[in-house]
Image (spheres, rainbow, N blue to C red):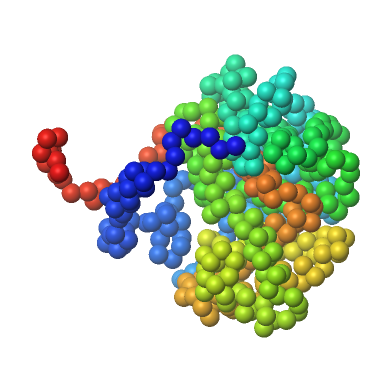
Amino acid sequence: MEHSVLTVTPKIEALSDLCLTRNRIDPSLFAAYDVKRGLRDINGNGVRAGLTNISSIISFKEENGERVPCDGILRYRGYDIRELVKGFLSNGRYGFEEIAYLLLFGALPNADEIKDFKQLLARGRTLPTNFVRDVVMKAPTKDIMNALSRSVLTLASYDDRCDDLSLPNVLRQCLMLISVFPMLSVYSYHAYSHYELGQSMYIHYPDEKLSTAENLLQMLRPDRSFTPLEAMVLDLALVLHMEHGGGNNSSFTTHVVTSSGTDTYSTIAAALGSLKGPKHGGANIKVVQMFDDMKRHVTDPGDDEAVTAYLEKLLDRKAFDQKGLIYGMGHAVYSISDPRALIFRDFVERLAKEKGRDEDYRLYAAVERLAPQVIGDKRRIYKGVSANVDFYSGFVYSMLDIPLELYTPIFAIARIVGWSAHRLEELINVDKIIRPAYLSIAPEQDYIPLDQRG
C-alpha cells in the first residue's frame, strides 16, 4: 500500500516546473567546454577513471593505426570467457562458484581450493535468527531490488564489525553477502507473492550439497524440482552476468562509494541502486515485454516482412512503449557481437526445445538477424549493432518460470561477485576518495534581500 506524507499537489507541480527551468543546461555547452557527457567521448569510448585486474572488454583492434571493430571479447582475470565456459561445461560442472573464486582471488582454483570455497559459501547461506520474519516479510513490495537493498542495510545492524575495513573482515562480509543474496531475493519475492498476490507462502532452506543455481531454483519452486538443463542454463547466466569490464555503472559505483571509506553494506546497497535502473540491469525486463507485444502483432515468426515492419514501428515510436528502442539490441561497448549473447544462444535454443518454446525462439532469432539492418537504415550510428546479453537472458528466465520481479535481482545475485572483487581492489590499491571535477556555468549574482525579491 502506498504511503506518503506529501502528495503531488499543484504547488509541487509548479515547483517541479521551476526546478526544470533553473536546472536545464544547454546540451551544446558539453561540446563547447569539452566535457565528456556520461564519461564518454563522441565515439562512445569511456573516459579512463582507474585501473583494474578483474576483467576487460575488447571491441576494437588496431589495424594500420586505425581502430577497427571486431567480435567482442570478455576476459575475467585475463581468461577469455568463452574458454572458461567451455572448461566447466566440458566436464559437466557448475561454474558459478569456480568463476567467483577466480574473480575474487585472481587464480583458477584447484580441486581442493574449489571444494573448500564451496563449503565456505554453503556455511554462509544462513540468516540471523528471525531475520526472514522480522525483516524480509515486513513491508513486502513488488520491487524486489528495493527489498534486497533494505535487507542488506539491515544486515549491517547484526554485524558487530560493520565498519571494520581490514581486508579479512571485508572479505568475510562479501562472502556472506554472496552466499545470502539468493535467499534474500527469493524470500522477498515469496513475501510479496503471499501478502500482495494472495499466493501460498513457503520458505525452502538452501541445501549445502547444491550449487548456487540449483539452490536458487529449489528455493523458488513449490515442489523444489528442476531439470539438469534448467540448472545448467541458470548457472551459465550467473557466470555471464558476474562481471563486465569494471567500467559499468554499478561497478564504478562500487569503486566510488568504497573510496569514501564507508562500510561494505552501504557500498553494496549503492551498487544495487545503480543496477536497478532500466538503463543498466533492468533491460531484460523490457526485452520480454517488447516480445510479448510483438507476438500480438506478428503471428508468424518466419514472416520477415512482418517482423521488419514491427521493428520499424518500434524505431518510429509507434509500437510497444513508444520510446524508439529495440530493447536487447546494441551495447555501449560492443559493436559486432557481445560474446555473452553468442555463448547464451545455443543453450537458449536447447532450453526452448525442452520447454516447447520453439516458435518463440524463432521469433527471437529473426529479430536478432533483422534488427541490425533496420537500425542501420533508420539511424545514424557510429558503430555496429548486435544483440546483447539482455536480449536472451529475459527469455531464459521466462522459460525457467522465474517471475518478472526477480529478473534484475538474479542479475544482482551474479554481479555481487564482481562488486565484491572491485571493492577489495579499491581498498587494496587506492587511498584517495574519487572526486571528479564538474565545471560550473552558473553566472555570478548579487544577493537580494528578502523584502526586495519579486
